[in-house]
Length: 123
Length: 452
Image (cartoon, rainbow over all chains, first blue to last red; front, side, top):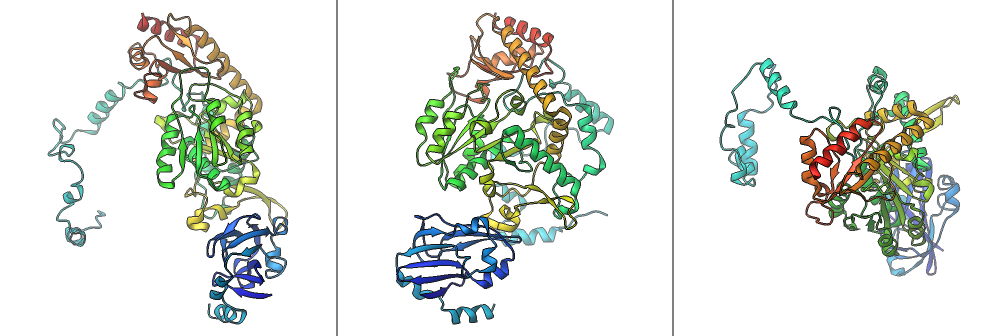
């Protein structure tokens, strides 16, 4: 499983042609206490860079963009009742949705973990 | 000190930047014949304050004020009795900042008033949650259509022919810029609404069906079937109420399955006041609350466990969410909402039911009398405090002739739907608790005279 990052602070963990998407630890720390997450339903089409989910904290509401184009296979239902999972485990249980990739070559434009860390350090 | 921020040189510099020679150059798009070439003829240069007062009060006396004569106008704005206590209470110093402040939690009284207002609106409409008010009924109606688009991710709304034409017109203006498609037709002068058309038109592309209740002709219809068909197709039912007093007598739209209920709140606590300001009411099912526009007050407890009020779910709003906000409305009609809330509190549930019963009884008695005028027919099979008459001739000149006889005898459909020959004999008559039996008799005899 390989993990990639976007400059909008989403992560995507890829396993073959399927992947899991969430927001990074840096993103959750910037947002503060998360109170609501809206994830896409399974079957939804998402486009690279397009709106895929919404995350609201006590101080801001942000859109979460799809790192790659694909078809959603599952939204994380656990976030409905417990949106704070995104704060406590952003890159684990606080995942947003799973999808099948339409074009794995889209991953080439994303950052690896080391590059993302350097990117965040420069912010 | 005179406050004249711009010198002639400043003006010239600005004109130079945009390439205009004079201020007049900015008005070249106005056709020459529409521009005033010189001073207004016969307008005196000056007059004393006393002379101006006397002149304008003489002009004002030419108005036929609603309170001076038998009055039967409705169609979205209703003349009800507002107890003097309402106006007295809204002017108390504690309420002077009726607007929701930008540091809202500092004004707990304002927030509590809005919370109670929301509670009243939600209960009246039969909905889970209501916001702190909108500008007026027509803007609330558009916001509901727009919200249904966000919820369903569709852009086709079906509007009932019974929806107030001004509300339709406003929706059309907005839809021109948002790209929403509106399916709309004019009503027919008949007891039958266009619910069959609505039921047939709902499909998997429909974002919402918008139905006014009671409708522009005063007709009342069970909305359950439309709600069911809309829900089967993943669409929402938006109900529009222009006369909230009606809900003291008939089932609320929420109880019949409406997902969003909006309307005008003017009838309760707010006078006719030359057409505004009014107060828009907006309520919906709880599951759609994050797509609801407008300010929302919530009840909570502070760190010491004491009850308090906050503005809640503000992330829907423009000052946080920018262009992704649910609406550009970041405010509410605070003072009118306060008047609504105070009047509603004074009435109480029982008072509202009594008021509604009185309205309906008076309207039924008036309808009975007016259909005895030769040639006049009642269009409605059902109504609350407003019904439509079919006259033996065009209604618009009849309204004028009635006014000459000191009766303000309703709204002609020709005025609302100009150029529609099928509607020109229609006259919409509203009868509220302020109408006396003598007013009805004056109306009926004037109508007999005009139609003779």
